[in-house]
Length: 342
Image (tube, rainbow, N blue to C red; front, side, top):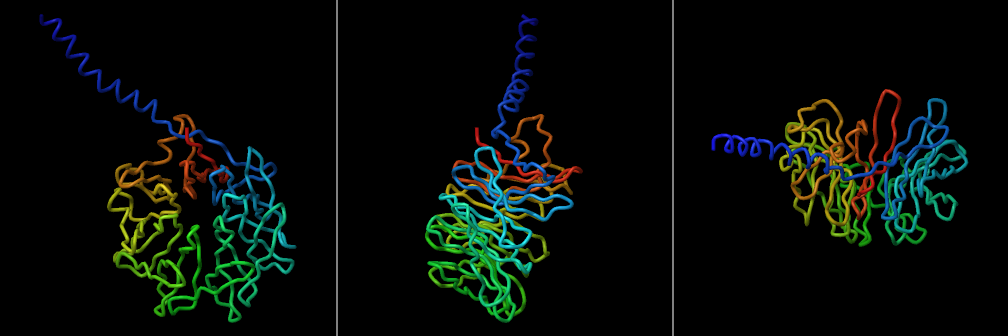
């Protein structure tokens, strides 16, 4: 009788361990695809669409950065506007790409790339501009210099660039646009503080901060949910999600570090970003890419194959299926990854 009880005790002790090991073995969520470019040592991915097309840039020690489209396992060079460099910042479901490229005179110019051709979108009267995002209607947002040389957010619509102004300060930048035409970004106040902004039906909405001077909106989904970062009164940088004008502190909800940024959100409300460390992880001082849905936080590295060995410094985008683009860092340089949902 005592022997039987002992066997039962051993089983009960080992059962939680077996469940833990099984869950660890099955916790892999993503298959990793490296986004490299032949002849270049470093790559960075900046945006992804639902067709798993990703855009970004590649570079090497002796070569200027080049805008790249990754699709179907191959890298397509986007070219430039008479100059030496370019980078892709955004892509929509039609495969239209926007970004910045150098002109013959070396100035940064916003571009639209479609059907293998790069189009210069111009400026607001100044010399330079950059396109950051494009929606499925072909509406483009970014920043462009005015006649006074100030950086202003713009909306490019039906072949015309529209100045979105500021919050009384000198500069602003539009970083994302959804299919409803809502635009997210930042704008300077008269005080020179920088606040996250939502442009909605030609109205500027100041999203505020968590008591500190600055904030920035990085992405917006079709529901109008905005994500980015905001300073606290102690000047810590916290990720936020803003829904219907209410800004939620993601750091306090998910136990993030005091230095984090939400970079993207998909239409299901899944958020990706990065931070300098996570309290529950105990690995402070290292840049860490994360994924978040509701109040549930996961480190992306924990969702990769156990032998991958990648050090993820950030996650830059997430599509509707939950596929993620992330960027790594190592002593050998940087490498963009496409994390495909299993």
